Length: 469
Image (cartoon, rainbow, N blue to C red; front, side, top):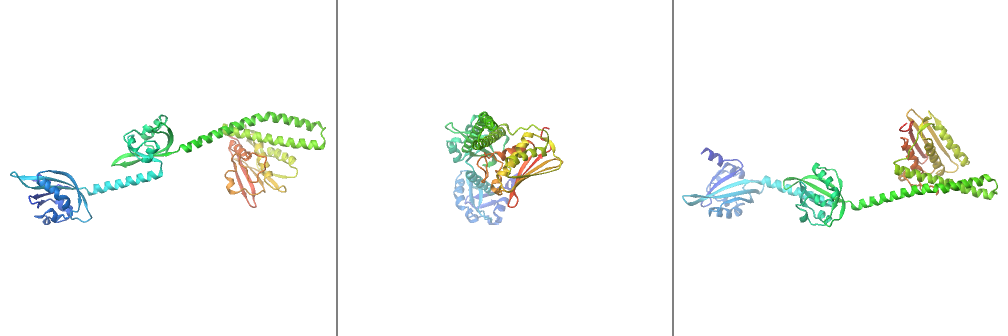
């Protein structure tokens, strides 16, 4: 009897016995607690009287049980009389007999409101997640252990199939063979960082995808959501740009190399004509103009070769030897004083000038910066060059009083083939790019300052000894 009493008062399970007239004759403590009605409210009363909100759902089930048909786990929704709104109940009804006659019905009630509410919230969360995925990517699918449980219409359309066709198949079915190992590895390791893979459409065509996986819950199970973006257009553009860059670099290298021989021959002939001394004044001026044009061509060819070398070899190589920076600067300044006798180039030097640098490259750097200053400043103004040696390196600044560089142009000032709005028409826009490459190859850096009243000043810092020396 004690075991039966314990069963009848088991927590979490509401029990009641109803007689043949379907009136309550016994109600356990759990059911009384669930309904918050006193036990006296049940005795001798029908379900319709005690639970009017449940009567319509329970009445046919009670009649079936009274007729001898067991009802197991029927779900009904309604109020037990307790505050807080309708409850989600699982009800079982068993017919009771006494002496072969129907004596009533046993009623068992489980309150599943908390679980059902949680399921509803979970479904709503999953729906919001799917809605978010559908607008933030080109498609998604849910999979468990690599087997697809659900696929969005957008994902299926991207792969040339339907969501129904994808469900139950392995994720790798839609991945090209060359990417399957990487995808399987990412899936096994539960990688959450985006990665690229090649997708395989139903018609066998390939497309480039960016893939991102995240853990999520699907019908109460821990699964993976995979979102994808179609990056085929971007990859095609990148490949086209790479091919164009490669072609341009190869073309520039070939042109720069093959032009040197005929240009050298032309320069030899011009030199011979100038030394001959038999030219009249007009002819001498014409030869001088051609010689100047040939020197500009030579400079452009060297810049093209340096550019190609920097792009294809990963930088400009340097061969550092002991140098005195002030002497290298003196050579460049003297050259410009001769070639530009009407312009003023001022040089100021302070501190220790000795170090280990590539002589020809440093001269090229100085030449480019001083020449740039002369080209971009008024004819009556001076270009100022300062050298300052310190314990750890050398600071070079070249200032001109030209029109300030616009702020929006400074970010690309050292990029190849970029020329200022006021640049002369005889350059390729490679000079400052090569200057930066030379500074970087020496372990240094370059910056620019420009503004009204300041003019434009390029500042180069170089370590006292180039890397590898």
